[in-house]
Length: 391
Image (tube, rainbow, N blue to C red; front, side):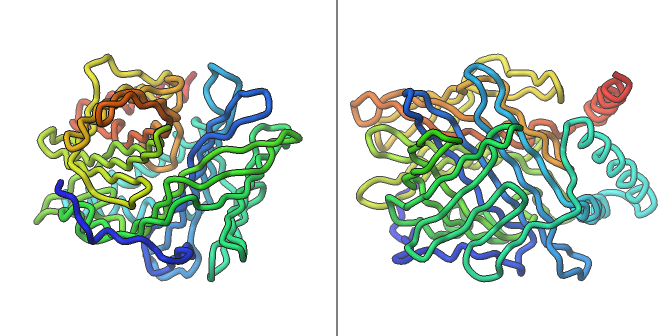
């Protein structure tokens, strides 16, 4: 894409409050913090608010943690939902199925799908809590059991989350080191219709503690909200197609940050939209680029059976750049209620940019690889699910 001057910076603290008029929205943080012994831990947390389409006022919640673990081992994962999320997922499934199947058949398929999703969630360790998070209507103030994310009068943010089952907590104060990008999906990619809102700060300095140890580092934060359509599915005339994506947020040691999103229409290899946003000391700009999976065998999850392409290359022709992205460890799959599992992992980055060697770190998100693209795929998924239940 060509550079554009209409991507905007927020001149003051961005409005991070909840948006009850949107179908779905989330707050997402990822990054790395260092400890006194020179080791570092990778952090990821995402809090989702999903608003009902049946007239109820109360929103349902989904919380994902990817927690620090011992080196070389999979991260400790928390996937937590409120009970109404299952009802809401069924409502959305009816909306999609009704576009492609006769009414009675659509209802039958959706009922079976809902049962399987609930069974799979229990097998994957997705926790359901009856209590809802406390979410303030003004500003940013989210509290749910042992998790909290809130803003402070001085413009900083506070993050509290558990890091193990023993009650150890990570507590951080976050301060933006760069202005926030405030933009909309249709400007990032004109094909993003209906529109959605996107706030992003790629560098927040993080200071605090992990248990009784001081911790400091840098985190990346995204805030997005909008409708399900176009993010999770596309509707073209009478056809409805599911959407997957590859997303990266990379922070390089030379001061550059890159946000990359590559959308994929499930079952159609021709549709691969990609945009790249560059952040540096001069501001933010959209640049030409492509995120490409490298020719390597996919990693196959021992739990879901999904294959994920974990090694990627970010190609940036305008900057004479080519950056290889590799996972810190392979097993960073996270179960999510109602959809195939997502691979959401810490990565390292290494390559060249404008004639100079660069290194860095970040996160890679791979969504949509578990969707069935044929009836045969669907039957194989059902058989695997039955074998897991019997095991």
